[in-house]
Amino acid sequence: MLQPLTDQAALDGAEDAIKGFIRSQKEWFLLAPLSLPPTALLTSEFDFSFHHRRVIFSCWTEKGARSWRVLGWEWTGEKLRLDAMRRMGAERAVLELVPRASARTLTANVAAARQVRCELLATAAQQLLPRAKVERVALSAGMRRGQPGRYARILFRTGPKRIAITGTAALGDARNIDSLFSSTLLWLNRLQQKIRPPYVEQLWLCVEKLSKEAARERHSLLRDELRGLIQLFETDEQWTSLAPVLPLEREALWRKKLARFPPVQPEKLSDSARAITAIAPHAIDVVTARHGETLRYHGLSFARVRNVIGGDKVWFGIEGARRRLLVDTSGADWDKLLEGLAEHRSAAARDQRHYLYKSASEAWLESILRRDVTKLDPGLIVAPLHAQFRTASGGPAGARPIDLLGLREDGRLVVIELKASEDREHVFQGVDYWRRVEAHRRRGHIARAKLFGRRSISDETPLVYLVAPTLRFHRTFATLARTIAPDIEIYRFDINENWRAGVRVMRRMRVN
Image 1 (tube, rainbow, N blue to C red):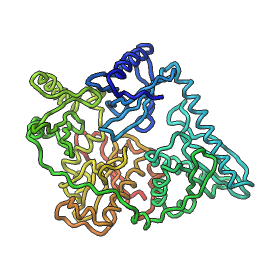
Image 2 (image 1 turned 180 degrees about the horizontal axis):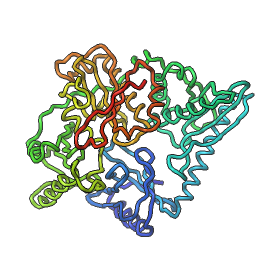
Image 3 (image 1 turned 180 degrees about the vertical axis):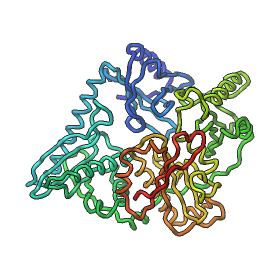
Image 4 (image 1 turned 135 degrees about the vertical axis):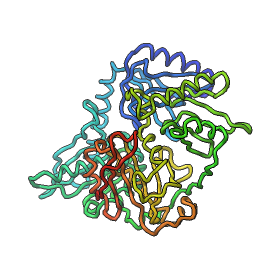
């Protein structure tokens, strides 16, 4: 049972125990199921800090520096479990630090648990197909060699046809619905390529209650032939029965209740933010929020400005390290940070393996396009351009913001989703953003909010621009793009590999 860290005595006990566990092992695996792939770490590559009645866990990952505030902890005998949050509670997850020696045992236990759920799903499906023959009950391939798959792969044969059944055998979460749909559609594509009958004529996609509405929304955005072939089912809590889920028609999608549309934040900068930006105006930009301002160096957050008791206060530090208040005694560290950013966070940096160069690459690409989005499409207006835009105030934890929301000169909205590395969910993320923006456009929320000043917004659906370096589109991109309904206009933008030195569009094409 996780022990909450609610008082000083609990913090003192946790500090002694956790440091003792960490000293006992040199190699660990970090498991953070909602946000990061499993990561191998040495003890020297992560840190626990116990200060000011808080416990902060920080480490370097494949996605750059990460830090979490630890709210509770538990040592199970095999792993250290941490109830953690980051980004002021926008992300919350149970992190697991597993000693490398017991990682193989843990992997085997996870695989066995997922296989049990897979078999339960097959048994529940057979109740609806009593005369069908079970041909296969297995897990999908893992993301990496040696890892158990996340999804059930079940085949039934009934007469002259086959029925494929899938669902999430791992712990389900509505935020993973894009991954589920991507994996399912790729599996279906492979099954349909088999040349020998009987062919797959139905696919049952089974989801839990919390993921049902998200699944219905994604299903409504598919091509008609896929919508007819894929049927949604809801599992009960024990995975012992299945109930058909009514599909969501596209028009019904626009009648669903929407979360409150956020007001436009004023662009006025504080004196502190303006002074810091002037240090390197070509590199530093400011992201404003209700609680203050975040300053970014080519997209990498390095300082925050907050108004405290009538005056501006500046905290600085790269995410993953403890932030410090900018005062006279910390001035030398502030200068050192700026020098490091200027040297390593530059297109001309000599060491391209340095963490300041590699971190937050998508944010770097976004910061370039924020300055001049016409490098992507000359038809887009330069300003206003909304970065990291949320379509709801105080939405569900973990709801992803839109990378860029822009407007073309002809009045048509454009949803821009950026990737700097391969990502299989690129297509479905972009299409989900399209759905959110289109729902608000139809109700006039975007026009009334004057997101683009006095410019008129045309009565047409938004365009979707999916952007990545030419060699960084996932190999399944074209297959997944063809599954989306053709009335959703999706364009692929291939940009140059050395985009840090300046973005150039190498190819633009419609993909669905």
